[in-house]
Image 1 (tube, rainbow, N blue to C red):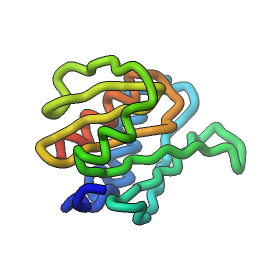
Image 2: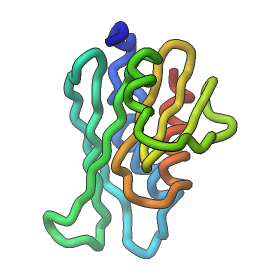
Image 3: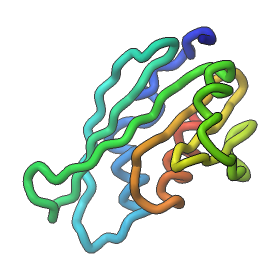
Image 4: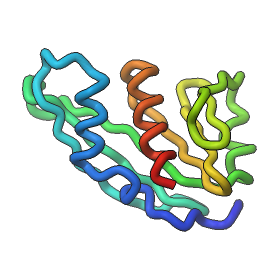
Length: 133
């Protein structure tokens, strides 16, 4: 495993900023987006789990996704799960493979997984997180 990243993942995008990004990317007819986040350590990096819901959704019907920071060394193993589709204009290198979104900025990699919305929403979140590194 590579050295732990120097940044805590939840510090990249706060709850209100994340809610704003999701609000811009998703249909407005389901009400406002509310986001909460929780940090955890995982191996050589940190993980931020974002839980989110919409005003019109019933109790307990929220969704969650994670942003993990890792070293480029860890990227070699994590991204070996399928064919890479490049994403232009994000960090030094960015791609999606098997619905996992990766962006490398210098010697830190952002990994976004499980957003389960449009690819555009995932790219918007990845771009915003990578832009903070």
